[in-house]
Image (cartoon, rainbow, N blue to C red; front, side, top):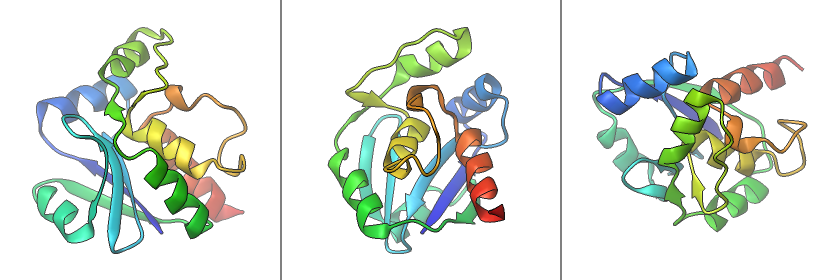
Length: 145
């Protein structure tokens, strides 16, 4: 499976990069056929890889290969499809205030929860405080083990 990190020149992308102090504003997960992501305007969705690629045709995309239990990860990802996007979480991140919502998720909250099925990625439960950069760093740290 792969993590797909993206950035664009769009307003929301620039704001997220500014707030999180990182190059990437969005992260999605793919098995090469399907993409799971949580994005503003649509929330947590599952869509065909080719549709995702065409939606991000003007964006910069960086792929990171990850080794995971695909069955477990896909099951967890599917279980949260339909959750709303967490707009307040971005403000909470900016002001360092806990705005955790169990029914609303950001892209990095969603995938942190999906990947951390046996505490294999993070040792704590603070998924609501994660940004795409945390997944970027964790993916490379796991690769080095």
